Length: 187
Length: 311
Image (tube, rainbow over all chains, first blue to last red; front, side):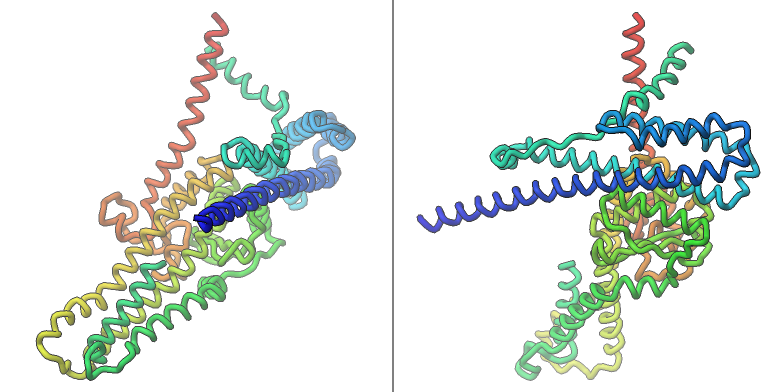
């Protein structure tokens, strides 16, 4: 009978190590994913002055919008704290979107290879930021779920694993679709 | 995978039985052909594992990206985005100069993974749609389909080769010198040699079809945008061009069936059984379902809440 006891004990030990290592691995993946987002944000800071410089000559009438982008960029770079930073980043995303929309009015710009190249670089950076955040949130969800579902929550509780923090979309970005809903209600 | 190894084993046994008089007093003590067949399959599987992706890439004439060309740069960026979304490493990216819109992924693991896209696909599709296609290929890499498909394509080739060889040598074989009582097993053994390539091909097709559905679903998980992939499928279906450099051995690697037999458009049981890819219309329909259901539900939910608030 004793061999059965030892076998069960061994299995429990293996499972314990397995689950603990799994949790630690996800924690490191989350940290890495967060760093990835920072890399993309940094790239965006570097690209924006280039775009503004190139576009300035063509878009004489849009100096206000261009200035807004520059301001949003410096505010985002200066911001501290997760919430403030998230809001500043959203403002920057929106002002960039405005520039892209305005660029449609300038056929000369569409012919400029340099501008097209910068536009593509910024588009991909925007997408990369979005996808990196999405992946980060997926990981956090998996991490938190592991800490709460039954067998693994025992280990997570014993070793004091803290739940990960989601990257949530700030209020400003969420408010956008509501406008269209109000309109549809009036009709 | 085990089925393929079983086929190798059975074909070897049949050859032993029919030609070499094994399992009788006169025959050799060791079933030689069985050993050879198993050895061949192991060698093939190992070569496939080490060299397969290189062979496949060179067989379709894949070339590395030229970062100066805007379209190539866009493709590179899109792949970077999808690598971030899937959490995989950045795969190597190749293009092949062919007007037919298609794409495939290969490689034995995430480190050696490669994605190859035709120039036809780059010119036909917009950014959003290319993203859907690349997400689909990235899903193949993430789900380890590329390894499974690699081994299957190598082993399928092996079964066909072995069976061909066995069939040819029937005509040159010496007359069977065996008592009539033992001829009972000769017919099943012959049948096996003739049928096994067919069955193993059907198996490969079945595996491939399931993997395509799964990759479509995973791709949507990456992009959160089923519309891009659905529109890409629609455009490619309407373009309707076969990819010249694909063969029957590599057909199941691709984004859509590169051979495009007419069966693919239809939905019948026979078409399902014989094709390496699910019917393209069904794929599109499933994607639209994924996209439409939550969106419309959310819309209705919001409106209901707003109406109640107004009262």
